[in-house]
View 1 (cartoon, one colour):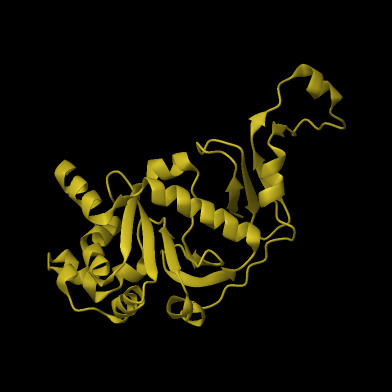
View 2 (cartoon, rainbow, N blue to C red):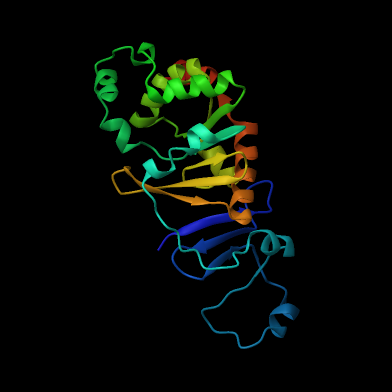
Length: 247
């Protein structure tokens, strides 16, 4: 079973942090270990396998789940209306080192042969972005990038300008900075700071579906991740130029 990041009250991304064991009612708490001998002596019924950490009350108040996490995975197509109906902002965090949908596309094959895929005509996605941004709505995303970038990340860097031309604001963030900031390690869209769409992938990086949530705890954690990532991320064109200059 995997851990799902719930939230943190740490500005530096080290601790304290709260996670949930997916599919169970259990949580994992990260914090400073209790070492005070007087405090340890006051603990009751301690088993040899147990340890104890100290966290601020605020962490549990803000992020502790009230019900077990039992996500319902829906086909992506059933949630596609959100990209047309949001009122203000659609914001994306991309965390993976590659995407199966990219590798299966004809654009990927053209990119492998050094064709200028960024200059191709707008597809349905970019036409929707163009229409939304013309109305004053915003499409924004932050992509995590390894050092050096993976093949999948280099593909996204090469094709980002076509999305930007349609109206998206795409920025990039080094993965080690994302870890330092305590960002989630899963992909999501956040619509109007109110609706969270979390992606579910298989082992081949192919989207199996999405989980939609309006739970205030989950949405708050996503909003905080967005604010951290957006503050530190670098605009796509500037980031791509820096990558080329160090290659």
